[in-house]
Length: 372
Image (cartoon, rainbow, N blue to C red; front, side, top):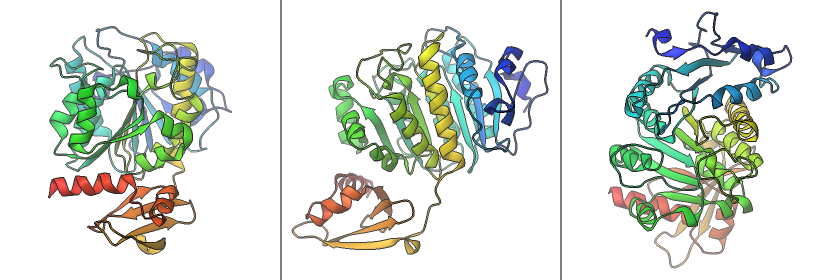
């Protein structure tokens, strides 16, 4: 692929923030006047695609990069490569197709590719590129709303409708993290019930942030709408709200996403085309913790390497529930009737000891029954 036909370098002014003590000097960045960086050995690849619904062009990601490259190095190795900006068109569908082609060339197991948007409709490119690997997809989104309105023209408010229509046979699961009830329509509520999709509400995250880690542990693709942040942390987003996640919480969620063993594609979206200040600083910090989690993720153990617990039940469809604990990282799994294990919390184990079947077990059990 002739990368320079589709990607534009970043302006030289970005190098003003580089120093020997920050991330800029430990990254390979496509800068104007310099050669296109080698990327084949990269573990983390960044590229921006600032295509918006209304055909506006933006420069928010340049500000994001200024904050990001000013931060401390994540590792002393040059494992982060920044390929610059995707050359966008004024037709969002064409830009999605171009981004898909680029991602198909970059995605592979063991590598993380991060798209800095742009409209959240670009998530379609992430999903289509992942589908090219011909594997089932676990898709996660951090957002306050579902964005599944029924409309033909693709945009940030209906892209999930297109994803569910196009990829339903490929989706092993979908989870919405940070959901707020007052942003979900009745029709969208029905989507969750009909397809056995999962929600982790904002209130659940405020009570136990590790519920996001459980939801993200099996993810392949993640789409983040920065409108999930409260207005005091990110005001330059679409449909900002006084209610939402804090930057600290989103950074922790991003680290959990990086921990996911099979995560390959992450997209950051939702800011206004010319967003500056705190919004882009929050995005830069979230990106840093995503990469830090990815580069230093916990090892996944087999069933045989974990501690096993069996909890007997009364008056339920199953007589016992089997749990597994990774003692090193204090992470838990629960076994389904077919022998597969899914992530769960310690609280789910305690719930089972009270003769209650955890909600997440029921969700995946019903999903399996629907498939059969």
